[in-house]
Length: 552
Image 1 (cartoon, one colour):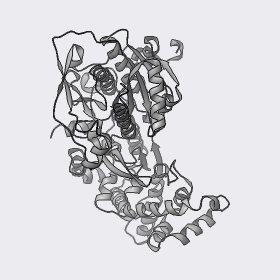
Image 2 (cartoon, helix red, strand yellow; image 1 turned 90 degrees about the vertical axis):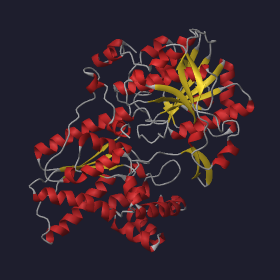
Image 3 (cartoon, rainbow, N blue to C red; image 1 turned 30 degrees about the vertical axis):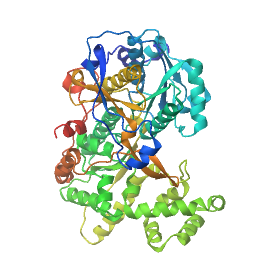
């Protein structure tokens, strides 16, 4: 990378020195803490992971013994979707390995897990790593979504590790990627291959968390980026005074992003998928929630507002979940026939195959949503729910409801709307100071776990609502996060996704302020852009979620 090709901010940001927990700034020793068991299905998980099961959580503590570690070669993989801070995990891993022994080498497998299988790699030298410090994206080695699930893949990985003298693989990824990391670790242990596997918790969705993992990396930055955009739109709405903005946010499996952005910006309406599922709300009831705010504000002369919608909402609405499930079965057997059908013919075909209850739901959907349900498929052949323009569907349904209320004299306002989807805008942003520090610490800590001979562990940095010097370093056995779930017709061990807890402090704060934010008086907050320089209370600020959860 030529310096002439980078922005002034980028150039300055390369020199930022991430902060480490105090314990990682000198010699350490590993101490065993409490033993673990899997999150669920203990007997089934124990049988699948006999070598890994029951291992303890470990912590690091300062040591007075200065021992030079032997040189070790390590491979690193970026897996899955991008998240701000991935480059700093690699930077921290590189620096951690070199601090333990300057002769250690770090190899990056290119394009994600497929690089391990296909033997595509580069050696990550200081010259390369220094060009990517504190930057967004995963472009230093690229990422991919290849799953490491089959024996031949593991054997191909072992082959290149033996060739390069690699003693450990660090996999930077989300729940699926770390599930694969644990499967790989178990396989190599059973084969006595001598290859360790360490994971790092990555996902902007925020659903890789538990009693030990306080947050996944990238969540802080992504939410701050989205919140800046939401705040900008709220300021525009309050200035133009004529639009209701419906904003769909990342988060198919959980609503952590929508909740955090709501806590940062105070929009009029925030839909939380987990709440919809828990209370078994229908689409009509979700629309009621929005319409109530629209009508109340219109009565006060304010025909504008902001609604936040998580991208996975439809799968949490019971009636839509049933419809999508039946559609998956119907469309799986009609793939060839659909290629020659018109949209009206497809609709008629689907309607004829659906059960009466699902046919009624299907008939109420706007035509463009019905089209998306029939056309968009994911890699498994199922409806690509995250790509459905849910925000536009809600706009159409709100319009219909308001038109009826207007005819009945119950609504006298004007409803004009604009829709938005904030997704990729946040995945590769330049990391916030928190994510820069947190990710660097995760990587540096991973190097220590490798040096300690551990495998099947996830790098763990806790107490992160406090200043970085007070952070606590250690590791948690990945298998302790597992339960069994039905995937592609078979029961498989997976890391349990963390959903928004309705009794948790972050949601309870939203709940206690909902009526106020939905009312006539604007309560909008405008966070502005991510701050990288300045007073610590501004540039080192954590998410509202972390602050609220730490006050338990």
